[in-house]
Structure formats: C-alpha cells, structure tokens
Length: 159
Ligand code: MG
Image (cartoon, rainbow, N blue to C red; front, side, top):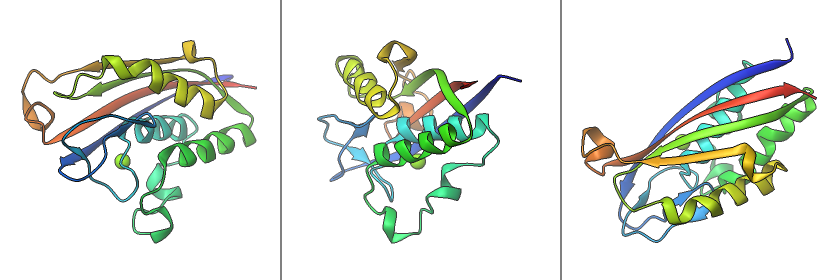
C-alpha cells in the first residue's frame, strides 16, 4: 500500500496567564492553553495524525508529558522530530486537513500565518495544509470557552 491515512484529536484547557499558541502562532487573547508543553492543540493533533497513519502510537509515547525536558516545549520542534521519523521510515505528507474548535478569539486572521509556519517546519507548500476554524455554537466545553480542541486528518504517501 502506498498511501496511509491518520487522524488526530487534542483538547487543552483555557486559563489565565498562559499564551495562546496555535499552529506555532502566538495569538493575542486574554486566555491561553494549559499544558506541559506550549499546549499547541493544533500541532499536537497533526503529530498524532502523522503517527497514527503509520500505527506508531501517539505523541505521549515519544514526548512524555511528565518529562521535564518537554516543559514549555515549542511544539513545532516536536513536529519537526515527528516529521523526521516519518521521513526516515520512507513516507512523506500528501496533505493535512485540520479543524480548530474555538468559541473565541476569531482565528480567521491568523490562519494564513499558521499554514506558513507549519509548512516551513514540514517543508511543504502551504496549499497542502488546510486549516479551518469553527465555533461550537456555545455548546459543550469548547462552546463554554473552557478549552480549545483540534481535529486533523493526514494523508501520507510513500516517498
Ligand atoms: Mg496536547
């Protein structure tokens, strides 16, 4: 088989006094995401989808959330390591499609920058990276602004 598909999901809690980083972009907001690393849910969902496509487990297996080494880690650095793992196994990304679920802030103005950041790390053209943002219509934890979630699918192709 010369193509594989993977899906990833992540959610982090919104709290005060934390930065809001999505797709490697620091977004001005009065709340940020809580986590051991920089809590970039979008990048985490993308990594899990990449690993899932090759049945390689999840990011917690490679970057232990209790390991002080990853405290405050830039998730783009972790993404670059996951990408290298995929490349070393003979695969490359075909395309990525993601949805971020956030009630606030408005993410549309930041999406082009997120695609550029991720594309640079993954050495892809930005047109291979789809990012959409939606609210949850005030329903559930994301709708109540208790957290932000992200869903991703990734297609991998044999090099
Ligand atoms: Mg996470």
